[in-house]
Every structure is written in C-alpha cells, then in structure tokens.
Length: 400
Ligand code: BGC
Image (cartoon, rainbow, N blue to C red; front, side, top):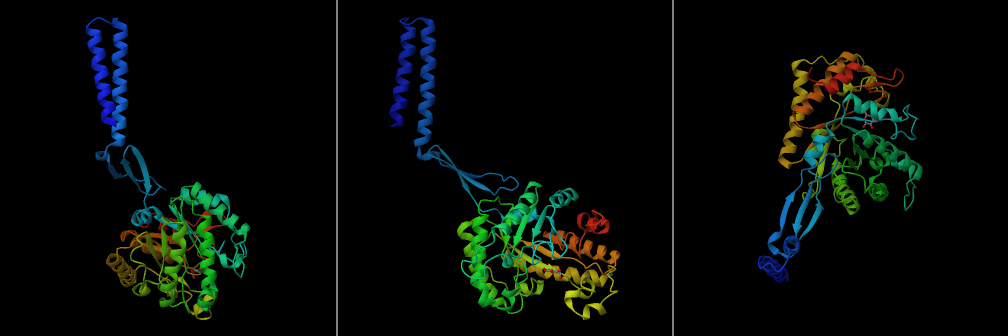
C-alpha cells in the first residue's frame, strides 16, 4: 500500500514540476505545489517505515537511577518501551553504603525499643553520604492471626511514610519481614501466614520504583532449617513475582544469614533479579559483649577489644572470601545486610572493626547496611542529634 502512495506522490510532484516548467502555473503557486509535494513524500515515507518489515530496531536504553533498564523495539513504526528487570549487580551498586533503621518498625510497636522514626532522619542519613536504608518491619505483629491475615492499614501507612521519605531523599530502600519469631519456632504453622503477608506487601508496593527492594525474611534460624527455608523462599518468590515481576529481591541463607550457611542456600536458578544477603558479627565476643538478649555469657565478654591485628583482619578477609567465592560460582551479587558492634564495646575498637568490615565489603564489590542507625549499635546519637563521628567515618570513609 505504501509503495502505491509513494509512487502517486512522486508522480504528482513530478507533474507539478513539469506544469510549472511549462509556465502553466504562476511561479508562486508552483513553489507552493512543490512544497506540498515534498510534504506528501515525507508523510508517505513515514507510513512506509511504519509498514516495513525491515524497520525492526531493538536496543537497550541506558538506565537512569531508580529506573530499570528498558528494552526498546522500533517495529512497524511503533516505539515500544518494554520494561526489563533491573540488573541485580547494578542494583547492588546503587544500594552502596547503607544503614539499618533498626529497633523502630521492627520493635513490637514502634517506639517500644526507644526509636520513633523522624522525617529528618532520612535527610540526615542521605546528607551523611549513605545511598540506602534497610527498613526492618515486624509485620507479624500488625496483621490478623487468621486468614486472610489482613495487615493493619495504619501500619502500612507508617511503612509507606518511611519508604516515601527515603525515596524522597534518593535513598534506595530494602524492605523486609523482621522478627517474625514464630517463623523460626514453628515454620510449618506459620508459612501460610508468611506467604499471605508477602502477597499483601508485594501487591501494596507493586507500583513503587525499582529503588525499593524486598527481602522476604531476616535471619531464618532454629526450626526454619535450610531445607525448609529453601522451599519456602521459592514460594515467597513466586508470590512476589505475581505482582512484582521486576522487583529486585534480597535473600539470605538459613542459619541467621551467616556466611558459612551460604553453601546450603538454594535459589531458583532462573530468577536472576536477586541479591544474596549475609550478616556479619564475628567475633561475637567482641560485637555482642554485654548484649542483654544474648544472655549471661555476654557479660563475660565485656572488655574484648578489636585492634586490627593481622590475625583479626585475616579472619574477616577469610570469611568474606568464602562468601565472595560462593557468589562468583553462582553469579550472584552480595549485600552485607547487617554488621555492627554493640555500644558496650569501646569506641576505638568499634570504629576500627566497623571500618575494616566496611572496607572489605567494598573491596569485594558488596553493598552494606550497618546495624543500626540510632539504638544500641547506633552510629547516630539520638539525644545529641549528632553522628558518632568515629563510626560515621568508619562507614563513609573506611580507608582513611
Ligand atoms: C536483630 C537485632 C539485633 C541484631 C544484633 C538483628 O538481626 O534483628 O534485634 O540487635 O541482629 O544482634
């Protein structure tokens, strides 16, 4: 069809030129006719691009922050932008250096563990140089026990508020289910509810940008064995993928996300939009000295220092290498979802350990989230409304 148009067009333009030459038209009219003819040719050529089978052009746009890659297809004149899942390695780079907003929305109720999130915190975190926040959330305390496990809209509203404030400050967000303790003590009795929670969370945030990432569960442990977790994570991923085919998901191994548990982690091979998470608190005699929730033994650890001796550094290097080797073999990016040292340790040791762990994570190409912002491990002093400089420096400039 387009060829016919084109030919008619060429013919009429030629005719107009001939007519003008034969002085049958006034000069002005002739010029106008030639212009009209050219416009016609152009229009017909556009139609021909639209109809031509040879005009299929495919490519990938360069991706903007917060936006996943787009595949474009210029086919039959339609410029289609087809959304591709983001590259998890790039997503991990964007997570960069982060901090956990711990002990807030993961407390039984926000505020009960001494932290109420404030709008200004997000700006303070972004201004300090962080790229992302991990927002631990105890959804299980804010949802019906029985089917359909409806999540309290007020809690959703509060989490929405936190995510929006993070995004407003250009912080990437890792959103998880945290402290669902019953999952660890009775996995079979809770897995349906767990999946029901994810169905709602995923649906609720499905239109959020790629800068929001989901992490199905913090530190699966106890009765939630590797075998059970590998099975459950597959189901959770399937639930998430129904409404969020392109959401980057962060998954850690059973055994409290420890590095040595990675070898038992099984993630669906075909799903590449995944970042694997590990947590690091070794040696716990140092990081958890005096930590009340660890029990009596932690009191005996009080006074343990970390001075960055060769063997201390080697232990961290060695453990991280194990994770890095696993990641290389499985072609997955790694995020260090938690690491930190409790306030009962001395500040010099805390800063030295934190800096070394952060630096080693960066050297391995990992993203990280320090545990945590302004509570017992906190890098920020709520009362003074100021950063604890040695810790901030350790996280932002670990080399200096
Ligand atoms: C827990 C926190 C705890 C931290 C260090 C996290 O996974 O959720 O409650 O303070 O580990 O033990």
